[in-house]
Image (cartoon, helix red, strand yellow):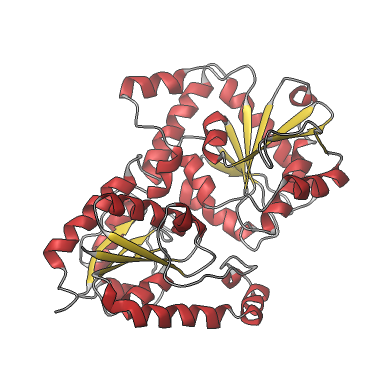
Length: 422
């Protein structure tokens, strides 16, 4: 039986890695994972064994985005932890036929250091950022290495760009992270009909405050402040549906504590089980709190208010407009939001104002109302939704990336890999 080790370095990367692992397990491959950041929750949920214990840091692996973040990581021992991960990889390298890296230059270096044949899904880099991708050192030379069996990119533009830069084929097969939220691709006629359908009388805004704590809690507080600044016609009872996709760590008690000073109260109606959907109220506004239902939030949404990375990309892949709200980080900062707009295209918008200021909150609420009005317009709305669907296919790809990539990985095993005992 062939054995593959997955290296990944982030929540979104772990999600894609777990989906690839699931596809490989179905094909009879033994798979283990070594998450370089965080606990590797998606792998655990998929039943993929982890190579050693894991630890999570308060920066969520994003300390490089600021000097303070770097200091925090040093104080918390993340550098030492990463080195211990590399040592574990080295000690166990001979057990695996192939190392599959998912992410950026960090798992890329890890795959190279393993001494084993390897492949990489470069989900962290895109030529959409600047038109021509400038890979960090030493990524370029490693991607040309003889033990690098295959390179997959996150979009078609990057595949074309890197193929020219590296002098080797780089392929785009789609993005696995889209698969958990996407229904099977509808026939072209059905897709056109869906895009042309009028917006419902009660549109839905989905809130995506992110997955990293404590940042996700601070993000949710900012979103609640935006909702109370929506125009009066949207705040009338029954005018608008609101749903928030929350991680398990942001439980009902935590939400109640952060929401109370903002004038929101948790509906006292007892749920059927702990942290099943609850309702948060502010006047006529009712926000449904959803745990373990991220896909349903996206499926119901007409517009997404996002302070997230992978979740916003999934929304774009589904053809949804995304309204950003800049926070204080460590992830969703002004710089991150601007880079995300370049990556995902004109379907992602943001109000221009000082992050966290009253002006930013009010401008975001006004922009949300404007976007909903555009969606409701009988002429402009369907045309815009068709454009958003095309944009999603261009920037994210079509569903089925997990299966296509798993099948491509299987092609490597019998053809190019030496025996572990050779």
